[in-house]
Length: 372
Image (tube, rainbow, N blue to C red):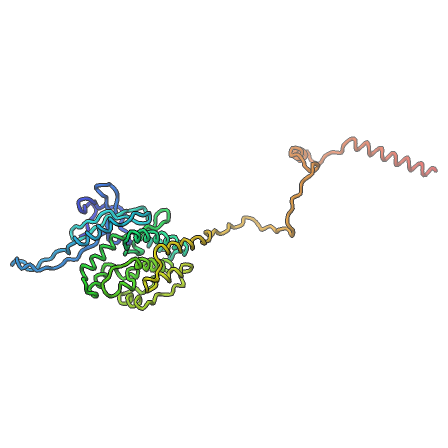
């Protein structure tokens, strides 16, 4: 039984009654680390109960116990120790086993699950490109360290407050693969069934090279998973049918993904990542370079023009020109205000006298002409 609020895991992690675990984290737990005081995410992997015969006890010949977690814990601990620190990788801290469950404590940042952003529909292509560039950087760091992430999917991606993507789930993926090998052994059918129980019917976890005989995922499998995730974010659905393992495996084997026309400017990259031949898929470094070049050509965010608050004004037939005003045309503001208060200006006395003299001279000239 999974521990509830107030209970302690491994004598160190006290399960809190804080935010409810999100759909992205399934039945995992939020906890407080008693040693460091930090809040952590506890990812749990339930171990199956195996039945063993006990011939040394007459009262109980058949007993049950949990699958020995020692091998799984050792693999996960090695993965945690070798996983590099990277700003786009969610870190795992420790792995412990208790009461039939393997617990992995990890970073709990202020972020929202990527799946939550898809609640309103698919994402814009250039926004997907930004997230994919972050994920490609995280994968490159893992691959450079000689590791394979093995658990890239929408449930393992968080989006931080600054909009950047944060990839987690590496240690949990290692635990799931180890458990599938422990249950399936070398039998291909049993291994496939056990791995399906751990990985689910998700195309990200089933590249063509992992169908059939038991195998270990290589780095191109992570690139396949990124291609499936991009297709999902851009179109709102997966590139292969996922209603059953049979339908998914048949479509992947036949190399019949859905049309990538809805992937927009990322279509060439998605086509390469979904190549059936692992050797034809670009690596994490090439993916990031391709996305960086695409983002360099991204258009500016669209901002609709504000509605005009007045009627449109007709533009002149010819361009406007600037004309300098002469000194005589410049009117002092105080002058204009003074005459605006006093009304029309009265005629000057000098002008009146001049007008009278002019009229008298004209009259004398008329008399002389008539008298002559």
